[in-house]
Length: 120
Image 1: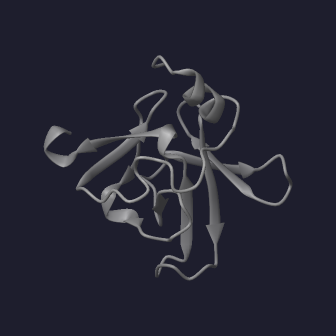
Image 2: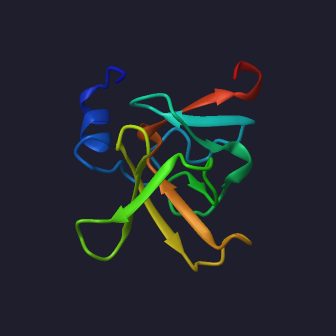
């Protein structure tokens, strides 16, 4: 497990959230991959990232087997967590019509780290 600061612990381990439009990857569109901030597992390819306007980074697909979906404690949403370490990423929403895949992984920037394609 990577060393996390207090805010990263709050979001990733305690299932918190960052304020909308505050995360470093909300309006970030470079070529590469996103990995789990806690354990460095590959989660999302930049080709699946899209602008949803929701205030958090949005992806319409994940790297196969990298993300688990489970009922959120609020009973209404579906939480997404890293399949390797169970770190909280955010929530997944289906049926909104943003992309052809009709899926939006709404991810906290603080839960992920970007790696440029040439550095992979």
